[in-house]
Image (tube, rainbow, N blue to C red; front, side, top):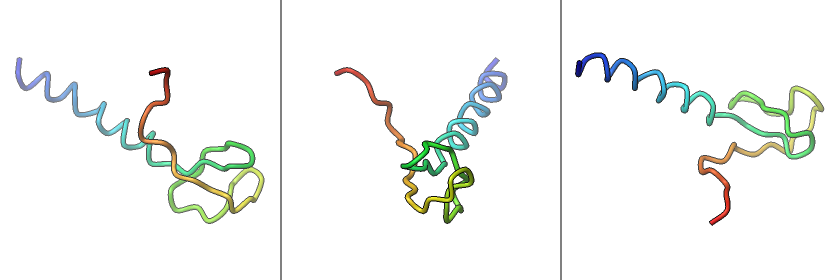
Length: 58
């Protein structure tokens, strides 16, 4: 049972890493790969890292 749980939890950490490791365009909000220099959609160079923390009501 322990081995099954570790296998189930492993993909979730990979998915989280993949989803959060993105650049977001400040102009059009498109998701871009982390190595991008400019936005793939609008060509803007105003890119920011995707937030690692969830925004919400405190």
